[in-house]
Amino acid sequence: MNLVATTKVAIRALLSNKLRSFLTTLGIIVGVGAFIAMVAIGEGAKAQVEEAFKQMGTNLLVVLPGSSQSGGVRGGFGSQPTMTWDDLDAIRTQVPSVRSAAPQLKKSQQLVSEDQNWSTQVIGTTPEFFQIRSWTVVYGQLFGQPELDGGAKVVVLGQTVVEKLFGKRANPVGQAVRINNVPFTVVGVLVRKGQSPFGQDYDDTAIIPASTFAAKIQGGLSKFLSGEILVSTASSDSTARAQQQISDLLRQRHRLAAGVKDDFKIGNLADIANARQDSSKALTILLASIAAVSLLVGGIGIMNIMIVSVGERTREIGVRMAVGAKSRHILAQFLVEALTLSVMGGLLGVALGLLVAQRISIRFGWPTLVRPDIIAISVGFSAAIGIVFGLYPARKASRLNPIDALRYE
Image 1 (spheres, rainbow, N blue to C red):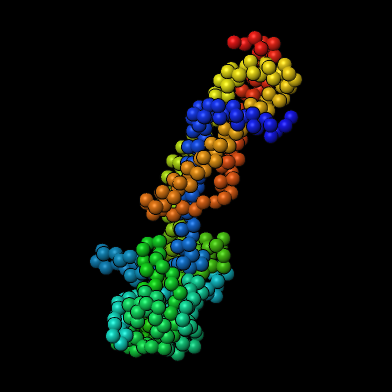
Image 2 (cartoon, rainbow, N blue to C red):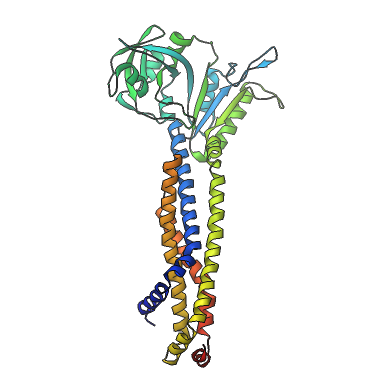
């Protein structure tokens, strides 16, 4: 049996009824197209969420102080200082799953250069903060432990602040800015991070040592930490374990009896990321349903048209058998025709899916990501549909009696 010759015969038979062949493959085209678009949207959303949360920090937990209550009015988490600097040290040293931890003290301040000013969020922290946030500098350097210990008046600026105070592409390292009327020396400019998943501009910030923040910006609260604690875990798999270990440690340190509510809150960014990804599941499920139904309809369409084709070409089958064609040759011929129909539909469906994904990305601003392996799987699955639904008509054709087939009108 010559596969090339069989394929040529199958293609000629399909091209003799171009419209019918196209309509037969329409279900496959829609099904594969919906599948490609579904995966492109889903993978794009997943990649965007992963990248956005990667910018926030690596395996990040956020420990917030408790909430205040006065006259029946309750504040949110962070409104009551319940975390201490000793708690921070304990998290660093006593929780095995923690890689590093740093305070994040925040206050909005007006920054003033020689001829410009800009209101931004000033953060007081320790050198571990930059490691947790995976943040490096494009100019200058980060401050270290000596600056923290000495309460140095140094500042590292985000690029939005640099643009507002010194102009685009400026290098302000070594220049002075005033924060709360206190002169600070710019020692570094951070690499641009862009926006958070919630629209916050990461680059609109100024970062100074926590000791300097307490002395010059906000004032100290003695042993209490007037902000939140950022915690980086050893790995993504250990985040949940670290969260539980920190909770147990803080409850013990704060002497909270069983049944008493926590006077702190631990936020896990992995949970937020999962919640954001869930928002794209409705569209994904819808497209998956369309793809499944369309592929089923496409397979039934192929089987139907192949049965019709067997009936129309009964005399042709009889002639082929009369001149020596075996049953396996007839079986192969009709299987190849069904396979050709489904693969053509799969390829057209891939093109349709890529076009739909591109249009959705342009029209709605949704991220899309096309994976080559998914394209290969789609075409392979459409080929399998053709074989499965083409097998019955092919077997029916191969079992025809040559004499009855030659007499068929």
